[in-house]
Amino acid sequence: MSDVRHVLVLPDRDTAEEVAGELPDRFEVTEEPQLVRDALAGEDDAEDAQWLVVVEDPAARLDSAALDAFAAEYEGWLEVP
Image (cartoon, rainbow, N blue to C red; front, side, top):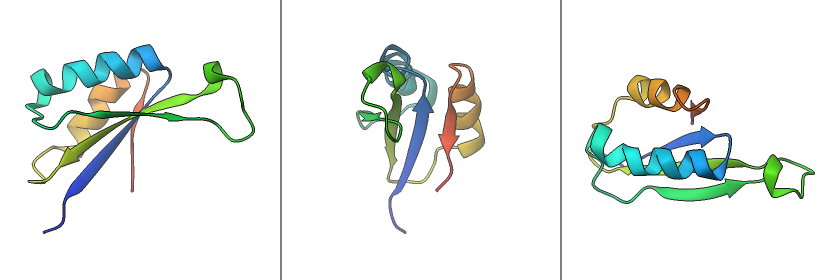
């Protein structure tokens, strides 16, 4: 079975950092979530960037629906591969 990677899309860096900090407690994530800035096409201003929280899930045990609901609490969503 291949590793699973979940990508949560959040509206800004502060929110992404908060979500990344909350993930280990909420979902018992053992790997450190990775924060990635995702600039929108044609936008140079960092204020217009979305932030991604990348969660490695080697055992494929995280529930996508629960992750999506969690991201929605922060005005974000789970990116569907």
